Length: 314
Figure 1: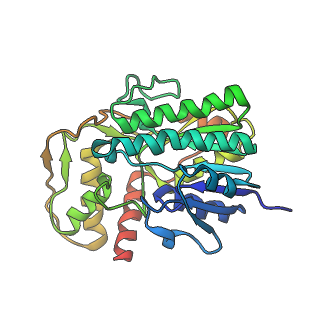
Figure 2: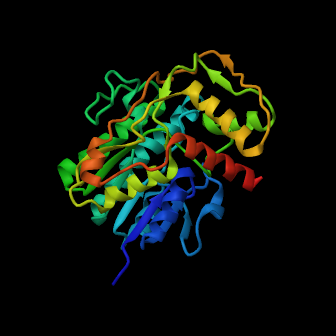
């Protein structure tokens, strides 16, 4: 029996590398397609995963790689912080890149699982946030993710593209980037490692639906496996609300427990980040019902897993 063949754009990135590995464990024949600009290269990929270096903006190369592929998981993306200093690059990859991916998948009759973002919603107007919550992006990144969905849905409506849209909420875990565009958790960890207090943008009362990467990846895979998912959009999150302040304090506590180190339970506050969402809480009932999705790793467990991974990789 032929293995189902999957191509993952952004396959050496944070979520992409976890997805490649998990797909292989679930019997897929996997190709990673990545320009290596966001990730850490091939070192996080399991053996026997084919890795191709290329950009989704190189339409001909992408099309050649996509031939005989059953499903494309589109995670090619430029990150949110980059939209403040390089918005043109973010729009080009997140929007036009998605357009090209959807166009080629339509032409080759590949199924497309498009990975959007909860950032497309903006701050919650109602909670929990259902998939029909209005898209009110507050950054260029968020706008690019919202509009990327429209290209995918346009090909579905007019050209018969088999697609599913997934909106992950704030995902964390091993392989998170730690460069200029790092997210809060790696930044908090590096401060704690150096016996410094985490720095919070704003009041710290803004909330996130924090989801461990294994749960996020499981939800993405289920979007391909569920027969009733075509044409639909799904939130993938924990379904629980956590303040940024609590997240930082949880990291301080867990690091202290894991390393048997006494730390000062103190946070430093600075001005708000531009366009920062104030509240996020996912309604995951649709994903539970149609995909069979069920998050398994709570915040305490997930933060401990992340800290143990960081310690082991130092």
